[in-house]
Image (cartoon, rainbow, N blue to C red; front, side, top):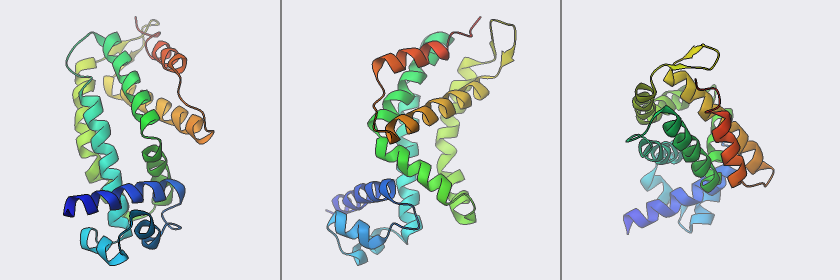
Length: 191
């Protein structure tokens, strides 16, 4: 019962924070959408910032789990292809979460406590990205340039995340053709 109530609050918060900025969203909005009293929200979460951070933590945990599933096998090209697939699928299926993340990053960029908590939350995702980067190692491009696996992963995440945000904000979906093109883009440079 307690976990069901907490889940209802988190799901409502995801929707509210996807629609409104952190500053415009209210706990009253979350209470109304979740069907719980505002005082109940305080039982589970300290305040609105704590609630938003828990939502962001779920985003990172889900993405970390999805990325971790790409690790076990394959050469660099196969791994990069799976990573592109992973990001495209995650961002397509979790549209609201992507918008929450974008809004929160913009709204709270200068909020010290939020930035500190954000860094703590991102730790697991960074650890998984580091493991993937180590598996990729240093990559040599067709022109002989070298790029670390970590830098390559950051480029992929930023590029696909930005692309998906723009497409989803315009109401478009990420198609299979889009995914195939992104795979080509992020593997065509390999030597």
